[in-house]
Length: 132
Image 1 (cartoon, rainbow, N blue to C red):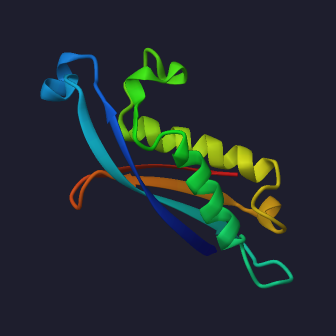
Image 2: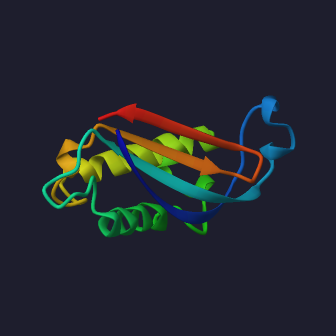
């Protein structure tokens, strides 16, 4: 299985509801390193799994809607705790849509899997992955 990974960052603010979150119930900031990994069983006729340039551009576009935002104010997130796990799944779904629309170029229709990982720090991260 081939793996191709692209990376970017985002800075957000948010708060959580529920005692389980302790002090994180208050508004706080987070800076995430976001990795998206594409899996393919084979390469295409150009010997690539996915167009890395297009993948980077699409990740930047997805994160642009979140970067420097207070997630508490985004209508689509109303009533949700925007945990690291939640955000990993959200980014996964946006990237999956882009793949389905052909925005990652020739060969992306043959991708076998997708994984999104968000690192909160050097000691804590969460990810979401699924086959395509």
